[in-house]
Image (tube, rainbow, N blue to C red):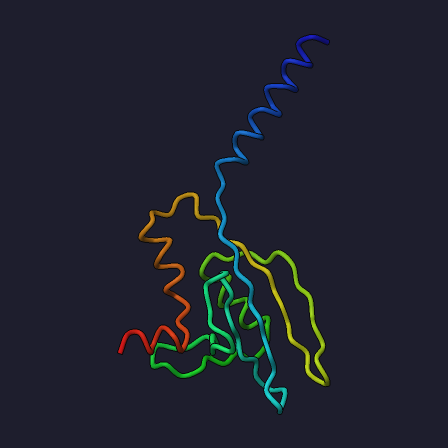
Length: 132
């Protein structure tokens, strides 16, 4: 019995130590449909500082608003960059649905430069204005 307790304690300690090595950053995809309900406009929230009513929609490399066919299309795009789905919820405002998908990315093996590159992968209108 004593050996079992020691083994169990060692196992729990190993799992606790392993879990503490993981570091995550979190993001939220906020999707709104256009009036024809055929595309979804995406905003990415990293908890970044924004001004009141600032346009934080996701942009392509030319500065145009990036459109997705659906929230799943946006999640597939994020998933290809290593983001993991955590939770989703919908808020209905009037006749429109606003979709919120919470994601996380393990950053344990990323350097500070690589971590900054992760955030730079999501340009918004503000980013384009600052680069000009």
